[in-house]
Image (cartoon, rainbow, N blue to C red; front, side, top):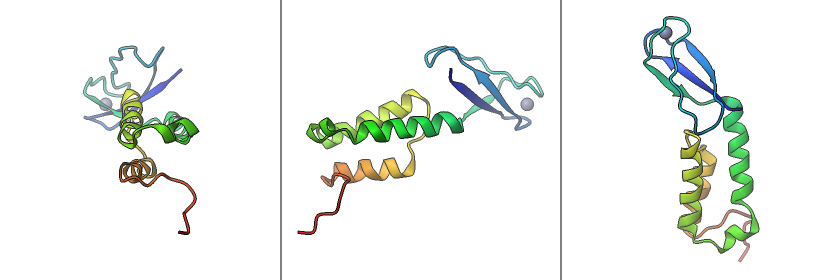
Length: 109
Ligand SMILES: [Zn+2]
């Protein structure tokens, strides 16, 4: 079950919200001051798990057959779906893939 964290725009208190599913609608309310203007925070646990999932899937052999531009798009869409920012290393890997440099052992040629 995903946990979303929302930071209050007024008092900066972080409220954790349990969500039944990734597609469920959430109407968060600050548990400290009751304000409804909250911004979604990165959930540390979910981000780490998702980042690893993405990296694992990203390195699957069949991905080598994809258009490099599609690989990046797919990864970005996946992170967007979870409302997360792409980790810096994943972003760099995508940019390299788009330039035709697949991540992996360095070629000595
Ligand atoms: Zn508040």
